[in-house]
Image (cartoon, rainbow, N blue to C red; front, side, top):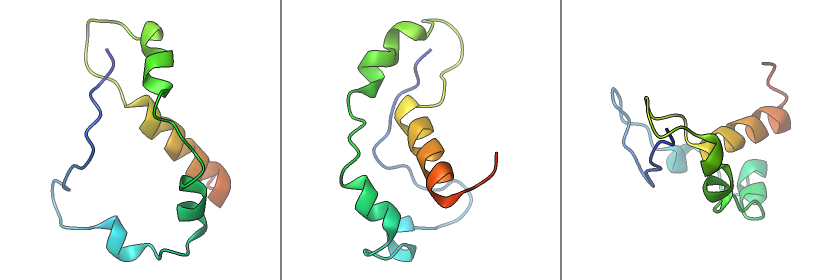
Length: 75
């Protein structure tokens, strides 16, 4: 089941705003300007079941993978 994407969701246990901690000149911000993943949900919708628990948002998953590759985070 394809989980709903929420534009902004506050933290559950603490107040932390990423916008306050990542400088505007950071490499990931400059890459975000060129990466458009807005239509990825429509392309991947046929691969998700209509029953069961909601999954991780595909756009979020791709963004997490890109950040891992760019910053060389081992998996």
